[in-house]
Image (cartoon, rainbow, N blue to C red; front, side, top):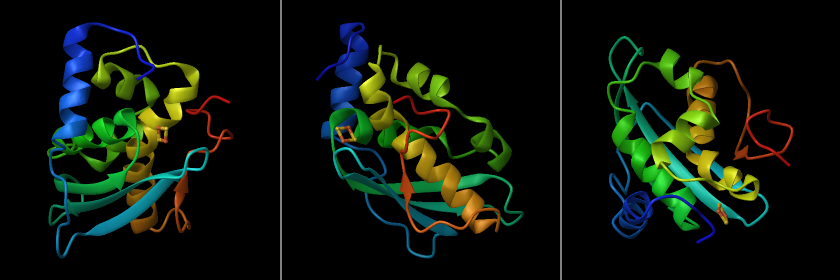
Length: 147
Ligand code: FES
């Protein structure tokens, strides 16, 4: 799978990959956004429900197609995001995602790891009118994403 780290974390990633949490759709989500890793074409689409103040994430669902890292990262993030404020979401970076995954990620695989995070962040910013984007791409001009 191209990742290092302890067996426990590797097992956890495989478990999230094989049994993704919150996989599916949420009808009447506050916003939905999609992203892809252009290197491989793998995708994540995410539905997010915000609370009435549009301040805190209440629920997340996702569907996607891709490698174990990208899909496990989306699954773990879907468990972590409910209860998180939009501000906290915006402040997340790749180190938070790598900590969440608990394994060493090679530079090539960082794009896989951060795809779901980027989809959630871009989706929120588009919803708030701060960004205009059809689809998130984990491009290398993003400081979070190495070449
Ligand atoms: Fe495509 Fe990981 S190989 S997202």
